[in-house]
Length: 270
Image 1 (cartoon, rainbow, N blue to C red):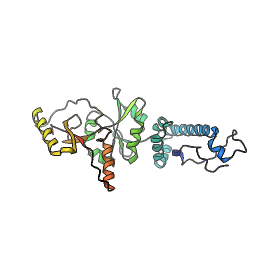
Image 2 (image 1 turned 120 degrees about the vertical axis):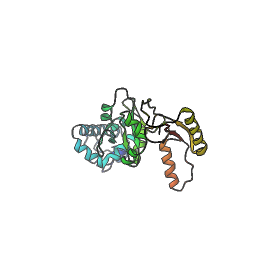
Image 3 (image 1 turned 90 degrees about the vertical axis):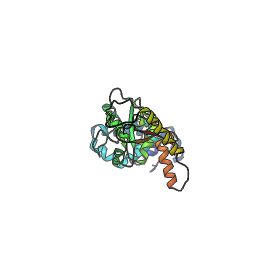
Image 4 (image 1 turned 45 degrees about the horizontal axis):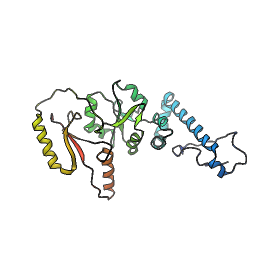
């Protein structure tokens, strides 16, 4: 009998406790042999799949029970989705997030998000922030709300990394709504008051670029702004939002690395 057999479960299932009784276990097996045996690998696979199947059934049929489980062990499910390629798709089914389609405090999974998507929507959208309130107060939801696009609201530090690692779910790309890699269709909207013509807009963009210098890589107009005057967009590379947050944390820890240049979008109708 081994109280803590290494390799019986993946690391992200370290919270799971129980007794494994297998008739295939030889009576005189040594601990060293047990750690390296093919039997242990098979048990790992069988038990992990069985537990994931149990969680999936709970999420579908016993939502209240699964929500209680998620409150306590959700971070470990996220850890598995980010680190365990073998079970990534099964774990992605179990992830829960807040959403612009639901009231504050309500959670949704990726399958429910897909069920609500318009047939022509190509991406699963998310935004990361310190809180739901801070995300809603920012400029990035304006364009999504105006187009009726649902956005998952990520508020835990690990959430963004999890989504970037999963990258795709059921043939739908998972992208941040503040990424330049996400393209928005042009929206026909009535312009209240004066708006800058193309010449004045170009002049303003040039002036802002000169004033901001190396802080920005480009200043342009775009389809992301409705009411706000300006926003920052970036990809997943050096100028991306996650990279900027990482740089900010490093600077807070005393590292003097310069922040990456960002792309600025302005609203000529503001």
